Image (cartoon, rainbow, N blue to C red; front, side):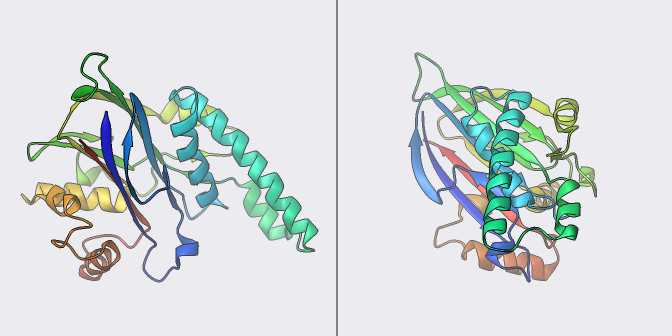
Length: 260
């Protein structure tokens, strides 16, 4: 199969790019991708954790590169890379004469937290260019939307804007992380065909999408036109939505996958 992937992201209003805590993988902005099996992921690092962006980055990378998309295998790979990164970070701080302060260590011991949404595509052996199967795994409130012929075929794991809560399920680096992901991970699968579009979005944009749809609007047309003359740049568009109060002020990440 062949797809065109576009990634868009924006830190919350008032924050710099360095304070952005979401993640997406692969990390390229826009490109063609082809293969018999393809994977993509987004994650929303929780602000209350320490180094949640780095944890979100390792979760998305682990989903796309682990030997299996089973949540436990993904978690094991992500945690191994997190522990390696953390050790290197602490060593670099010590070597620079800036070891972690007591309050930094205390917050770090509380763990890092993130949502995770990953989707995997597989081609049919005899119909590699035209159709196949997809499957997705979600922990938390980052959402997938599948579009075909101007219809939303699937919204996962949340289908109603009223179902977004204050505290979503999260993947954590704490000692009970393996148990938590086994308990909270949700799965779904379905067919894809050429012409389909998939959106992977973190919670603020997902809630906007579902709210717009419930009002009878067609939000997928806006997302489909991003990076064209029909739409302003993503940062400007997000700023206007925040100004209007129709999107919560949060980091926003969108991966658009156009199946060619």
